[in-house]
Amino acid sequence: MSLLIVVSGTFIFILLLGKFSASVSRKFHADFLNLEAEFNELSLRKKDLLSQRDHLEKQFESIRALYAMTEELTQNINRQEAFYIMKSNLRDNMYLDDYQWTDVLAPEVIQEDKEEESCIIELGAKPENKGFLVFRKISPEARKKIKILGEQLALAMKRFDLSDELEKISITDSLTGLYSRRYFSERFEEELMRAKLKKIHLSFAMIDVDHFKKFNDQYGHLTGDGVLKEIGALIKATIREIDIAGRFGGEEFCVVLPDTDRVGALLAAERIRSAVEKKIIKAKDTIIKTTVSIGVATFPTHATKSDDLMDKADWALYRAKKNGRNAICAFGLYTI
Image 1 (tube, rainbow, N blue to C red):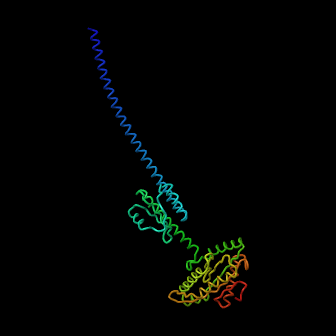
Image 2: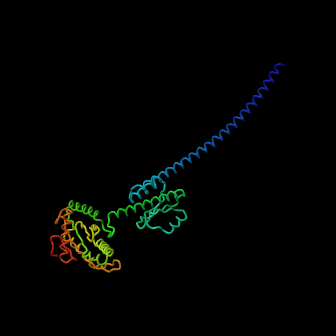
């Protein structure tokens, strides 16, 4: 009887233990499934965060490159460097490959730009437009960045234009548009040094408006200024591209003629004299005809220094005026 009780108790214990083990197993299995689901959710979250991080890193690099580009464009650079900065950074840092340079915009490109399917950057301010940079099939985010770049580029171009204008003002005579005496003297020295190094001729011409004081006395200084402006334009239109023309002062002009001997200088002077003689000048509702006298001197025939060449040309000019004005004369040749 006692044995039966023991066996029955043991059986009951084993049965209860089995039920307990099954309950624990089910609980562990449920906990495992929950942990596995949490792990999978965290893995997906991690993957999403890594993707977001990569996207943010690309955005940061793109914005950093855009900032660096705009910062470079604000530095003291020229147009060519600005275009190079833009071209080299667009592909390397902004991941933009589908773009092209064009001189003229087709109507469909303009329409695409309006529909935000493309983006257009005008490369330079009018009238010195350098063409257009056209981006196709870009994202709205890239479009915003390109527009920012375009604004910075436009500002840079405007700054270049202002800088060019200031430089032009600093080296040109405000009335005639020819070089100022100071800048002309600098260029004269440079060309004279080049002539010495290359052992070639160089001529200098001094030009004076005949009877100019009478114009001022008879018609007034404003009319006189109009005459000087017209003569300055005639000189500029008559000489070669390599020649250098300046206003020496008052009614006197001067021209440096690189690689030109005495014969060539006399021919150049005659072209100027003839052009002025034929010109009918309209200044302040006044029709005027005038003439000029010109003296020339040549390196190394007459002098080897700029001051000496000027003195010799001035002496030749004096002889041209003594010969009746509306005349040309080379130093040492007074019977022309």
